[in-house]
Length: 456
Image 1 (cartoon, rainbow, N blue to C red):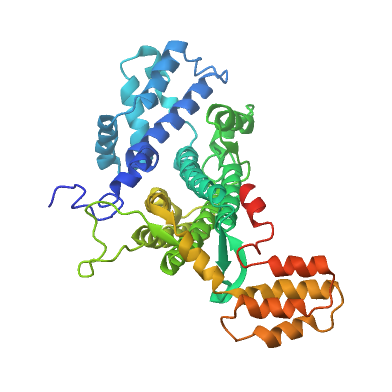
Image 2: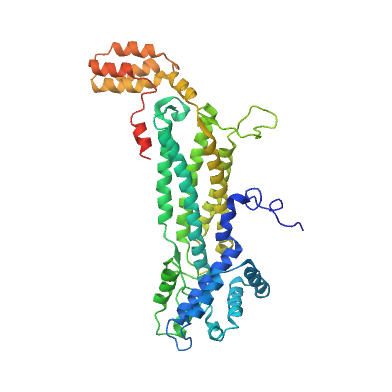
């Protein structure tokens, strides 16, 4: 079998694009998952020792510090030790429990408490809470990436706020806008979605095999187990407590998060396609990089490959996110295992997002405005002033203004500025309105576009 490295990796996430996903290993790798499980088990144990049970004295500050150090200083060697135990147990959470017991066996105080490791817990009490911790870190990294993209787009929006550009609704010439305003639209959309991603509440449960605290209550019937679980989840681990579950936390919050991530990616996919098209029209040029080749046979080519790569990987990410959002909230009766294997791909979905975001940022960094091409396009589209003229005619009660301009312009293609100026001079409207129309050009017919761009 070949040794695993970036050239033999099955997935491009760990191969060609590994550098773009490296930070996600800290949050979503098998090692990260085991580390999170160790943390949850330890916080549960320490909290149990503070509950006042005769059989479990309060763990000393020294003992608690040692236990927490097992999670804080978790290493790849520790991970390998747990996997070695799993080779016998064939159960990953039980392997974590046994590993913790092994780590405290040398300490008299902690070894006495060791049977309270994983006390009354089902595996999902540990797993669902671990996933919430991992996603908390993943979300922070995701928001940083999306915010960086939004800020880059916003910077261009402000810089090019006043640069006029021909709109192309339905792919046809339409009322002018500015380059900055079109970029501002995307920046504003992203801002809203970033806020929505940030406000998704993450939930976890620690309530036993079917969500009813059965084992807890039969063992210590007078203790408030629901309040205890809430304290561990909310105060110690920083997640929201879900009081009503089956064996698993139902993952509704994950579906919400993944749908919001899909929305962000859809906005970016839309943006990539638009920028690709504007590059094709010549509105943008791309900075050249020494040594790069655009085509193996056509030396002149400077292809918009970064936006194409981003589009492709955004599509893969959304396919995964959509599947997970639709699948994870569904579990047969109190539990089936279909969610477990899907959840192990959280990092894969994030990975394809990060690959796309890296490509998109690279593409943004290459953009240069081609103002000559923009101006040429506007000059060749005098017909877009028909909207302005007929609307002013409406104000002053000129009969059938829309119909007159339709007959004059529809399907006629390029028309000269002189044709419109001659028509305007014949209009029976106030002279100041006539002068305003005579001074109007496609490049100045941009409404509030500049102000709107600067507000993004």
